[in-house]
Length: 113
Length: 114
Image 1 (tube, chains in turn red, cyan):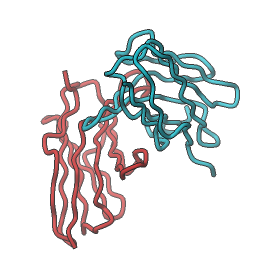
Image 2 (cartoon, chains in turn brown, cyan):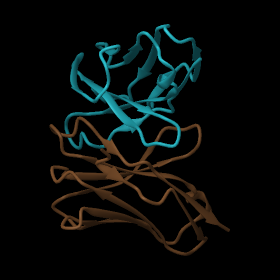
Image 3 (cartoon, helix red, strand yellow):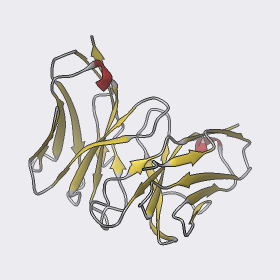
Image 4 (cartoon, chains in turn yellow, purple):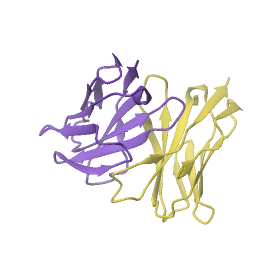
């Protein structure tokens, strides 16, 4: 039973354009959502997060949108850069003060120069 | 500020053997979580340690056990290894004040069970 799903295993965009990565969840108890980026041979790196009391959080080129009614969140990267090429994981928490992160399967983003 | 470190980087073990993986937390962090990442999947939560005690556990059997030491470093022990235990094992540290949800990961230990 996958509580967090990333339905697109891969995404390819041109440098300078917008990248949109999507994530769906089923557990209505989740109240905090995070995006992590992972390069090969490295651990996941925290990127941006959003609390369920908000519907948008922005940090530089990265914006996360949360639609609670649809149980959907998305990460927008504008403008996309070749260095953004990595695997992006969506994660959610809400169980017992965040002691457990539930991850999606990841989306591999390729930004072409 | 020192990040999360893990050792060893790679490990090959035989089915039925036991393995110990090690993790040093980022300085200032007092909570350690362990995750298993199978090929092509997202990380799965194994358990978390806070103040040297288990503070939450995912859907993993008891042959997965851990320790946290007074300096907040941690070990993951797996007994009676199975082929399906082959995965990348990630350690993540965080602190209980502020945002405990934001966990900071080490580079992982790649375990291969043959």
